[in-house]
Image (cartoon, rainbow, N blue to C red; front, side):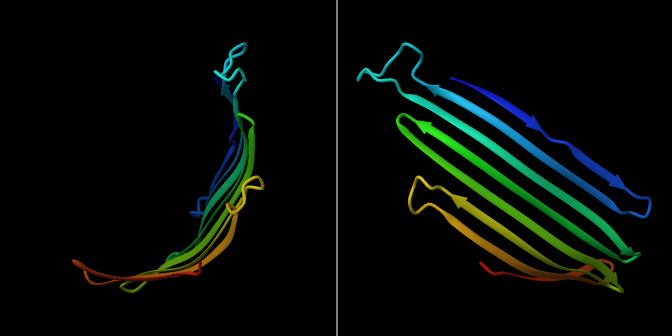
Length: 167
């Protein structure tokens, strides 16, 4: 058995004196795994049994914090991932492709005795396995959420939140 792997992951950071911050990354991964029967060896049936997995992955992500004023902050984050597999297991060969995308935006702030947050998110997931019937899926899930923390006196805090995901 053996494998070879190549990975590349550059990152980007940006900080501004006004509090704006951005972080982003991009990733690339390529991996090949081999196994099964050894060269010049065979199963009791006399045949060889190759085994292997070829993986290719591309992903990206970013986070941004953007102050709007002294009491409000806009935050954005997102990520995406695309992965392809090519599997060999004896005489069987199975390919699949998976994708995932996520994005979220929140606005948080402070008003008198309230710390509040409102936001929206969306997530997309897909799996495609052309070699195996009934395994594929593809869906999108949007969401809205809100939260409030009320502090009427220093030693007491009351919190309420709600979230709706449509799946």
